[in-house]
Image (cartoon, rainbow, N blue to C red):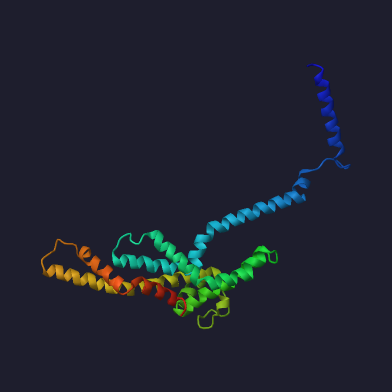
Length: 261
């Protein structure tokens, strides 16, 4: 057993000699040289790309809510459920799923343009990340601007524009162009515009159901049935009315038409 140690030592010494012989003649590698090597740069670039991808995926729900038609659709669907008085029916998961499907349908032309002009050129290496972002903004901006123009909510744009510190020679609303409006002011103005439009649609949906509640409450009071909740009696009549007029067809059709005006 003792005779085996010298051979191991000799083998280690030979390995050390080989390792030293592989070093450059001008001395050992320094740490900056190792960090600046091509494999290290490729590894760092891959890590940065993974980090950016995870960040984008985590922000995807917020992006969909902020710059698409999802906000208006989910608000109108939720107000309809409240107007019916059916508590948690349909479930929130169904309403969100329907809102996502309608969003995909309505935003399909915008997504197609964004994919062809920004995403695919970036994935193929024709554009850098910043160039892809610049190419992807015009389709989304055009959609948001069209909705704001349709419902005449320009005051919201001007309100956010003033609070961004924007300064221009054309600071009057009547001479300001959409090219002068930065995206950081356009996005919150679009969200406010969508909320305003959604609540107006929800108010119109509420009216017939409110009439049914008032009629039922008046009948119960005239009959002296004060202890019976009017909502409990009016609920079947509201559901019956909604079914007879094919309410879901009218509701979804109205939502789709509101984005094509």
